[in-house]
Structure formats: structure tokens, C-alpha cells
Image (cartoon, rainbow, N blue to C red; front, side, top):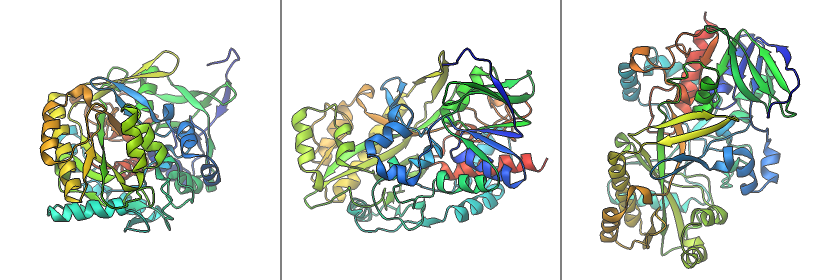
Length: 489
């Protein structure tokens, strides 16, 4: 809540709003160019020792927006998870770092009417990111039996699979990726780009929420923010970089009356189908890192299959809607279970709307095509898991019994309704998309909202569409290019 006190004024050269994948790139590259950088982050700061001292549930409550359960209303309601902390979602994701396929970038260029972000344009930025974050191909380590089983199932079906590319140094396989790495191995922005930016003079201010961008109708000249004590501060700046994420950036543009009719109108999503597989052998899926195998056979259809980070607590939470006997039975068999995610690229989009008091209203319009795609993706995941040796599967529908055969899977897909799915999303994009104004674009090729100077968007919201892969590498490459263009002016 805003206090009645008059806002104080702070002079700044460049203000960066948000400290995730895009904002951290801006902070480091601007500081390296000799600019005075102030990073304003809405969430708290948590070092590696803090992450290790807290429970996984405690970290989720503290480091995720709304505890990781921001609702996207529609049929069905989708639970959306994103980081709200210094380092943004990179602090609580799996550290996956895929390079965007050249065909995807070429398609975006054709659809958006803009150029300069093709594979050859982003190659140098992707090399920089890969080097700075020590991106490796993650092999199987101690644990990860769930990944080994999935890989074996894919091979029996002659399906392509791959080890993941991850930003990590000396992973200790503690299975805490999605609630904050407790060893510092995962190269989130909080242990990589941001400390480097600070060493070059950048200042990071956590627990500071930006209320709106200040402008004269054509040129941004700063932001109004609320600090941890509730006091208001005007940060006057020569330039503002927005990187508040696919929800926060369009909401901030709306509150600031900047492209407010187009920002947030189209939010593109990946959604995750959770499948619990029981095996005749011990799996101990809580041992190991995030995952070490991903089925890529259907990547061109926007479908990826992989194990999920799991603990007894997270499994119990996922089973909350099921009858108590089912939950007890599954928890009793925890050591023989694997929890798997099938990621699906939606065709329908969602919308983001800022509401009074700083809240958000999210709605989606999942289409009949999407429901059919979910059924088909579930079939593929089930086929892989039965090939891996699973004896039965528990689908992401609380009313469904366990499925013990391909025939059960087909019967399930015939009877499941759109409202039955229990879906989660952790990847939102394109809510302030780059593109020509006559094609519905919110920002131009320099990341500037159309009609505005002194303001640039450099996070997931500026991507022209949905990636179909974990988007961090794409976000960072786009952010590098946007900041490079600004620095070269």
C-alpha cells in the first residue's frame, strides 16, 4: 500500500525493473558499458546459505509469486508458477539452457515483420551466455533412476531422447533445483550475472515494487517504486529497462498507460501434464538432479517428456485432490514411483490484466485443438512409461483411477473433459511481443514499446511467440541483443 508521505527522488542513469534472465543481462551489459545501473526487484534476496537453511516448502512460499499458485482462470484453471526474488525464475528453475532452433527464429522474423533476431544474429550472444553460465550436457549421476528408465523406454520405441543442457558447475544432485539450489552449483542469475554486475558498480534493491513508469506521453524518464518500508521513491533515469516477467511487464505497461490496449492481450504458454508412474523396482526419484533425460521425438509438435523434481511433500501436494486412500497408497510406494512431466505448447493464448491494488487477473482460452493436443501428448507420455516398465500410471485428473494398460489410456482419453485436466505452467511468453505495429506487436525491434523512447522491454514478454523449449536461453539472447543495440547508439 502507498503511504501518504511525499515520494523522495533519486537520480539514476539507468533503471532495470526485475532481476531475472532478462533484467540480469541488462544489468551486467549496461554496467560493463560504464553506465550507472540500479536494479529494482519486487521480491526478496536469498543467498545459497539461506536456501539451504530453509525447507523446500518455505522457499516456495517465499520465492515464488503467490507461493507458486497464481491462477490462470479458464477451463480448466491453470496454476502458474514464476519466481519473485533476486534472480527471478532462474533461482527456482531447473537451469535448463537450450538454444532456440534456427527454424523457430526464422518463423518469428516472418510473422513479426522484424529482423535482426535470426540464428546468425544471436549466435554471438548464445556463445556468451553458454560460456558465462558454464552450460554443460548433464549426464546421469548418482540417482536419476527415473531418467534412466525413461531413456530406456524411449530407446525401446526407437524415439529420440537427449541429456539436458544445463547451466551448472559441479552439481551435487541434491534434488532442490526448483526451490533454490542449496550448493550454489546451478548458475542462476543470483550467482552469475548479478554479482558480476555489482562488481562493476550496479546496485540491486530487493523488496522494491515498481508501481508505474513515469513519462510525458512519448519519453520515459523514470519509475515510481515502493520500498520495503512502504515509502515511495521516484527514480529519475535516462533510460528504463523493463524485465518484470511475462506477467509483471504487461501489467506495468497497462498501469503506466503505455501500449495498454495491446500489452498483455496475448500471453503464450507451455503447460505441463503430470503423470505418476509406478515401477516394479526401486526408483528413489527423490535422489538426483532435476532430470538427466528428455524425450525429444515430438519436439516439432511442441511436446517434450521428462521426469520432474519430486519429494514426498511435493507429491502429497500434487495428490491433494485425490481420495485419501489413493494418496496413502501412492505415498507408501514412494520409493517405486517416478513423476513425469509432459510439456505441451498451447495454441490458444491467455491474457494478463492489471487490477486495482497491484493485483493480476489472468484468463486463458484453451481451444478444442488444445484439448485434443493434451490427450495426444498424454498418450505419448504413457506409451513411453509403459515401454520403460511402469506397471500403472496415475494421470493428472483427480477423478481418474490408475491406468494399467494402453487400452486404459485410450479409454481415459475418450472420457476426459477439458475441465478435468490438472495443469501447471511455468513458461509464459510474448505478452508484450516484439513485432510490427500493424501485426499486433507491442514493441519494435529495439525492444521499445511502439511510440516510446527511453524505455525497453527485455524479458520473456518481448519474445514474438512461444518457444516450445525451456525459454531461458532465448530470453537471454534477445536481452543481449536489445541491450547491445542500446549501448551502440
